[in-house]
Length: 526
Ligand SMILES: *[C@@H]1O[C@H](CO)[C@@H](O)[C@H](O)[C@H]1NC(C)=O
Ligand SMILES: *[C@@H]1O[C@H](CO)[C@@H](O)[C@H](O)[C@H]1NC(C)=O
Ligand SMILES: *[C@@H]1O[C@H](CO)[C@@H](O)[C@H](O)[C@H]1NC(C)=O
Ligand SMILES: *[C@@H]1O[C@H](CO)[C@@H](O)[C@H](O)[C@H]1NC(C)=O
Ligand SMILES: *[C@@H]1O[C@H](CO)[C@@H](O)[C@H](O)[C@H]1NC(C)=O
Ligand SMILES: *[C@@H]1O[C@H](CO)[C@@H](O)[C@H](O)[C@H]1NC(C)=O
Image (tube, rainbow, N blue to C red; front, side, top):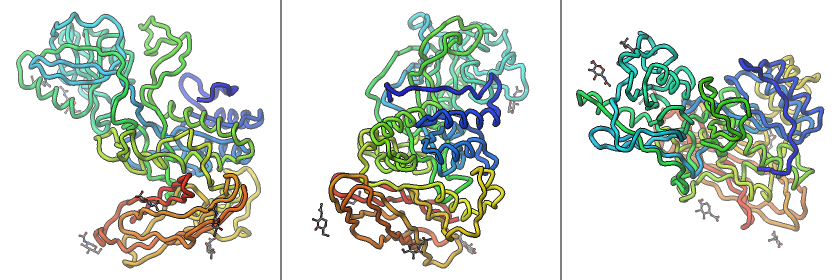
């Protein structure tokens, strides 16, 4: 993304783990070395910030003007899985791109199921059908008997056959090796609940492909319908111009933010499915010992791939605007992101091809060209984050662990959590609260354009609320000028059941005709 950037790499993981002390030491060393951006594709389950080495390290980075970009995790599509959620972190989810690697599974009854594969070796000879067997009917194991874990397949049953393995425990790609060792000649790797319709491409060692959860059902039905199920593969290489794209990746971890509900996460999404990525010389592309192939590049999927895209864009923005704080860079990334795909439709969700939501894509998909000229930004200082932590009921001792400084909450100006000057807005109402309840949210924008400019507001109300802004127009005379406004969010639940609990989203856009400064608004009744 930023080809002329210089990269410093800090080793904080060994083969088995990434210890928290190493992570924190690595982040601190990078900050001390004067880096501009930290990109970290590491994360665990979301935990309170004072127990989270990445959140603590990131606080120190932000304090020193270093933008901190982190992967949001691959635990989607389950709700509330998003990780690295501290408001001073830029949290990145994953989307597909318009390139894929299709491969067809042709069943004995002639039906064709399109899956995904990077298999590049000798295929089955053209038109040669082989017997197909379900691992769940060919296992020595009583538990987890369909997931092709090492040593579980019955050689007598799978020898010479294509084996359908369910995803689940164990790495995807290892299952091809398990099938090969048991004498199997092909792999169909099937998504199971909740993985849904998302596919990634793997460089299987034997002919193999991945299929979606709904296609798994189709294949199993076929297998049950015939005495001698059989199938063959057709590998199709690379396909470009795929539509729709981008789509929120099924595996991308989802909001809501389980630690700070008033901060919408993920912040942003970026390409994270089937990404061309550098690969170490000594490691086979499948990481399986029997794989003798070596490659300088591999195709990899995960928020570990999407995060560095955003880190790279942040580095470009830092180059274009050396005086911008990390919060200004993050704001520019978020307020210019897009929530529509290349066909102009709201981004879909790969889990079931339904319309996605802000809990999948946050502010939207990163747009580098727009981010360099955002018009207005929402800036934040260390004091703002400390006030936020005080308002969030972290105690002084915990805040001191996070910030590594002496802190007193009694002295600070009383604020609400949702008044953190964030580029998105997230508020909650009690489901049982009176039918008309109101939350007031304060925001301050900084003008980063040239000359003078007038911004007007355009609001799309989330269902069930009316959003009003106290300023119709913000007038700016010169770069750096700040203007504050107040957002009143009135919950009347019009169009919703009076007992409704759940979330609805809309947006607030400031525009001068040239720039669209967009903030998602999410309202939750719980
Ligand atoms: C395979 O596992 C499933 C679910 O754990 C179980 O219901 C089934 O009986 C097992 N089958 C065999 C043959 O052990
Ligand atoms: C698994 O084996 C059982 C018993 O032979 C059979 O009824 C069933 O159809 C098989 N399932 C599949 C998916 O082949
Ligand atoms: C929000 O803005 C209003 C109007 O400026 C002000 O009265 C109120 O004190 C602000 N709240 C906070 C927490 O800053
Ligand atoms: C902004 O609005 C003021 C009136 O409030 C007007 O005098 C000025 O020309 C406008 N500036 C631009 C750039 O439109
Ligand atoms: C406000 O936003 C809506 C929805 O995006 C759009 O249709 C409308 O044209 C916008 N209005 C103005 C004045 O920009
Ligand atoms: C709505 O809430 C009331 C009070 O809690 C409860 O008695 C009622 O059954 C709820 N109705 C529905 C449709 O959930």
